[in-house]
Image 1 (spheres, one colour):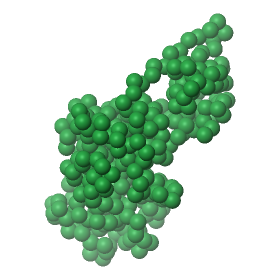
Image 2: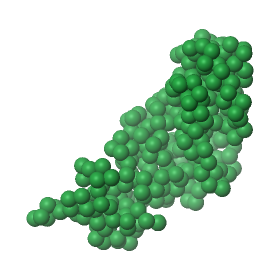
Image 3: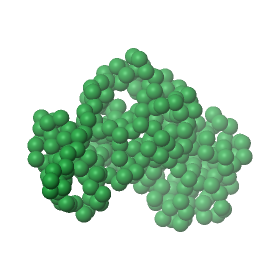
Image 4: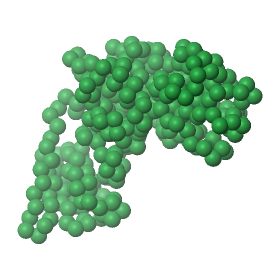
Amino acid sequence: MVLADLDGVVYTGKNAIDHAVDSLNRVAADRRMGYITNNASRTAETVAEQLSGFGLTVTADDVVTSPQAAVRLLATLVDPGARILVVGGVGLTAVLEESGYSVTRSADDGPAAVVQGFAPDVSWKDLAEASFALGKADIPWVATNQDWTIPQERGIAPGNGTLVSAVHTAVGKLPIVAGKPEKAIFEAAIDRFGATRPLFIGDRLDTDIIGANRAGLTSVLVLTGIDHAKQVLAAPENSHPDFVLADLRELHEEYPATTVTVDARGTKTFRVRDARVELAGNRVRAVAEGSSRIDLLRAGAAAVWGSGLKIYGLDVDPKLYED
């Protein structure tokens, strides 16, 4: 079973990422494919239509959204059919209404909970209504996700985490989070697909990879979205991916081994194919850049992660993270 994030893995905004569609179609030829997205602005049906438009074979049942995970959480917090104040768009309201909840946009309606998700047209008024509701009563607050940013065609834009932070600042409370990096969305996907040994592909260390690691999935970071070499090298231990790929074509290539040797001085050399990186004390140096930038990064990451030191305690060769 292979599960994939969407933004930064399959597409950026309205544009498919190079090589993603062909690579995932090859996966789907002999493995079950599923898709997980923190983006709460659209329904699973709309997401499936977009993916199908790129040339992927996808139905709504193949897509697990953060609103779906949020509603699973909500069911443990409020009574069936309760009135819910929503900050977000149709991707969130549709799932709530399908699950039998009553949706409101006003704190004056006495909602039993607030559910907040991203939509491009979320305004100050929406954030204010959430703040009013949470300030009036001790009610649950569920956020679909806390992604600080979202990749768009024109660049990186504020995500739901930025909007959640605005409400948090106003009310002094924190939400329960359904989406990545929390386990709820991964558990929803595992239950949906009956997966036993899923592999998850994402582009963000702080949500995708941490979340997959927490949920016990094999994690793959692809460098086509938010995080790149510098972030990989600096990644805390809980966000170390099992595999790092330059793009999704490498799903179908043999993943190279990392070998480590130690000389008489105690200098460690990390080798990935013809790329070599040395770790001597707190100095990390590229001694052979090799024929592939991704192999150099893999060797560099192994050296940094294996040093036992935080990134700020290391002198890292800029060759390892320069574009």
